[in-house]
Length: 399
Ligand code: AMP
Ligand code: MG
Image (cartoon, rainbow, N blue to C red):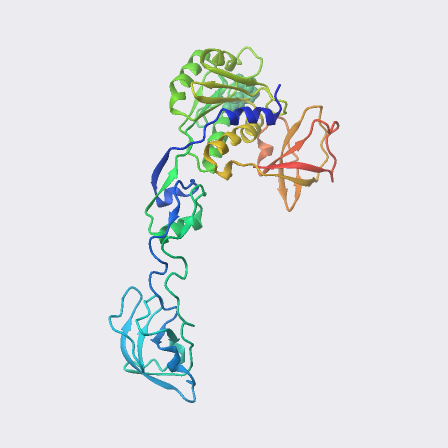
């Protein structure tokens, strides 16, 4: 039986890095991985510009100006942001200018309007400004040719702003992994359908879909299938060529209706493993169908969730290089006691400020409700024979 790390390494070794790229409209690139260097074609700003509303003039001519001894300049024009001034500012001249407008040739600073009499033909100024002091030089932010965002970076809100300022309406990004999800179980019905004795609503399919969506990956398909090995095999065989990864839930244990073993016999081109040394979700099964890894998780909702996080996320990390799939591991002081058996255990938990709490509810692998608000998994090693006590330092895997 593999350890979690061994199972993860096998899965990662059988997963391919996605190299296909596509152009997407700028805002659709949020959360995607950039597949080209984002390089500036223009200086930013593309021209020296005014940081103030005031008067553009030659700073050296303002020496000694004050309220008591103002200096006068002839106003030879007026420009707003978005306009250009055609002439040149000469000795004793000024141009009325607004923030964001290009500083006219000849001028080298801007006197803020609060230090003037707002004159229209002639302006009196009451303060001095050194050349280039109140002046945004061309290329102050970045210059033509600069690489602002490197290929392989994840595009966040700030990157979107930078890409927009570079003029990108669309960007080349790596395609998202094509992930298919199948939940199995005769007892499982779709939320919204009428409750029937013996049935339960499907939470696993929705957990996995939601987690993919939360991390910016739209699932290719998400379907429920009955415990019919021929049908599940057909679905996997048909859809595997279009998927980079298939995740299933349910039917991996040792019961008569645990059909995924038969499915594996029918469709696997390579078997990878069955069972991992972990609680919950030990009976995880995995194989390759054609070229597509198929990971079959336990049907128990917390078993499916924990193994999705611990085993499936590393596959998606390898495929995308996107750190949203990485699970940082930290060490924290646990705030509860927890008794466990011999198995290596992963518990749902909540961390804050370097401390971690276990929820009070049910920790069974079949229970999902106590996972509400949890933001991590606490690992209790096999060697911690009797579990952990408040104050112990534990390994915390951030979700
Ligand atoms: P299985 O792995 O198929 O033996 O299922 C283990 C337990 O998880 C059983 O109690 C199932 O009813 C339950 N279960 C299976 N699939 C789902 C699902 N999609 N959503 C919620 N519970 C499920
Ligand atoms: Mg079942």
